[in-house]
Image (cartoon, rainbow, N blue to C red; front, top):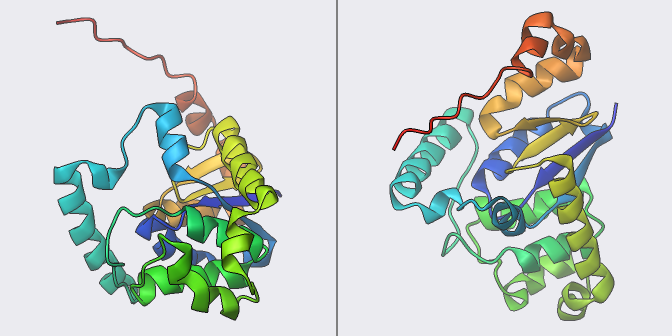
Length: 209
């Protein structure tokens, strides 16, 4: 079973979902894949949730409530949305493993620190063994790796983060975790005739004006 978890550090929902992933028995087999959510949204012609004023108000309250319900510490960084590219590239420079993902998520969403400039990440970079973060995050191979990750996510049909790909089947969102866990335990759930029928449901186009 190929397991790929697409995420961006700009997403607090990805931070919350990461805590759940770590408790899964399949966690060691999940490959974290840092992507640029902004590029995905641009490709689809969508706005980010925090770019819609009424939605921004709702999701911030809902995030605070969800974190409290789940017993997860949550402290927003100084500004949001922020430019996540330095953090994403630092993650790749550090190997994109669970240790790096965990440390960067905690830096931003547990400690509430800025991550939109390489200068704000120097202490974290040193913790991750990246001695020259300015050079590391600007390296062509690191930038290219993030671009490839993002393009692969778009090609796979990813439309938001967090998304867990289970053998190519996409499961999106922190709130979808129980379904993800159920399918990880029993992939045959996806083969149910009733579920398969949903995939061929026709689209009714409303042409009224």
